[in-house]
Each structure stands twice: as C-alpha cells, then as structure tokens.
Length: 75
Image (cartoon, rainbow, N blue to C red; front, top):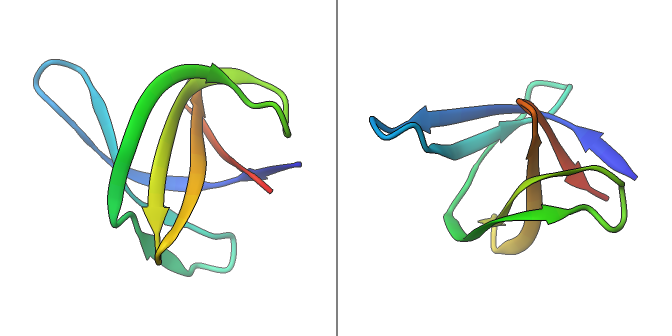
C-alpha cells in the first residue's frame, strides 16, 4: 500500500535532494531524524520505482520514495 505524502526537502547546489520532514494529510509534520541510505530501488510493497530514502523518523526506520517528484511511503 502506498501512502502519498507532502515532503519538505533541501536542494543542494549539485542538484541532490535531501528530505527534511514529511507532512500527513491532516497537517501533522514529522521531522526526519536521519537519512540512513539513498539508492535507486523499487517499492516491493507498494509498486513503483524511484529514489528510496531509508530514513529514521521518531525512532522508526521507514522507506520514503521519490518517483518522478511524487513522494510516497510504504505502509
């Protein structure tokens, strides 16, 4: 299952994207504590392909995907 999200991110001078927080539909904002890994990968649970950011949010490891500027998380 895919959870579509708003994502706040920083764009570096070299063009790389670093997500800083996620925003749920109800407006709650969760900061990304740390990005553990970035790689091109497929979402095995939700389908789709893109850059996969392995993130720690509130102490939990989650996979955040950017598929052609469309952000989602696996559920």
